[in-house]
Length: 541
Image (tube, rainbow, N blue to C red; front, top):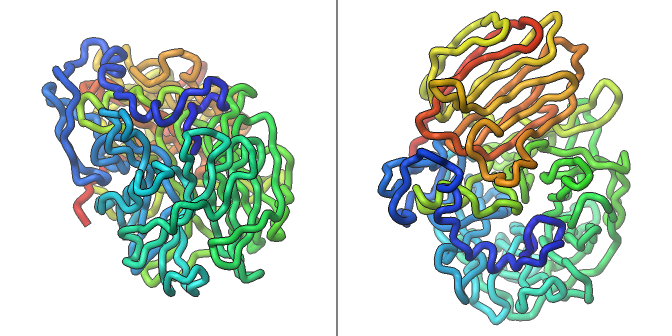
């Protein structure tokens, strides 16, 4: 990811200074009436989903119950996890000097491992910053070099990563680090880039895959409004092959390239990018195209992208292989994880004041390629199945009839709610989540007319501008039914609509005392069928 803010590079703010700035006090101003500690907490956790940390003088904690959170300080971009010896190795950008800044600002790669992608174990920094004159390390990708193409040994883990010695968009280049201990620690392969900048602005975020058909490595690289494609026999020398250009959705970042088999047996390539489409009324999350790739040229099925998330906070997302416990690849399904934040307000969170960290991820998703009735191929999302193994409590509410408003007896701050809403005639229906006892504060999620939505205006949230309060995705009201699966945690709401055809991921900062749920309909009645609430308990792996 680039070092400037997420406004398509328009304001020129250095990312080095951005991630160095402490957010202490920023969220407190958004949360009137909330207990506030005298100073930002600096406690550490075990660095995984479900972990707990110091919650400051107030005793309030905003650390997620079942989402991955950084142990302390700062995290942003996920790096594509890789499977090694029965474990997923999840690297992410981490700045241990977030609250102090200065000359040590910038990111390293920190590592967490997991066998189920729900519960993680922190392994500390794997790729350190400032070990060469090139400074800190940005986004890139790790691969297992099974055939020793790079010469560091069969099974060596190779990282291709962007570095920028002058913190300048024109000096961004790609460098190589290698590991011979199973991806736990890395050594720089000299101080020179393996892919120098040819003199262009924005040249970053290499995503490397193995092209088995052609017996070589392929890199997708973000180059402003273009994704460049390069190939290499050995991961150390790269040749330009072609590119894919898309204007109108901001600076392209964190590209993704993979092949997936659809449920009908057809195979398609998918090209994805993190992009900012807000200026065009589009999301600023993960845009993708299905199509064909010949090793040099990507040919999309349609010129305009689809979006894997329609919320405000699913950025720098990566997809990665789904493997069983024996390492066998599933060609029909991939996993995906995104950063639950947005560069427009990256430093605004109560987690820093109360828990000593700023950095939460979405739940890991399983994505599959499906075909809509009109023939459009699309990626459908569902939460990782391993969540089922961590259910600690199930509340079955059955079928609930609603005509106007109905408060539920359940209270909670972290749970999953599933329901299917059916009706004959109405304008809208949905749920009020994290609802205050007087009904004045709540997050709304549901459908209205021809769109599904999540609206966070009724609670404290990071968008101080007030412009990005309600996210929307298409909905056909003629269906007269909608299936909703909603994951609520202490600072997030993730909604999956109709088996994951559309998703919304959104940061929210409800008062910890707001724990209620209510159902609502507008201009008619509905039945909320088979309504179930599940809570999760994570134990250390």
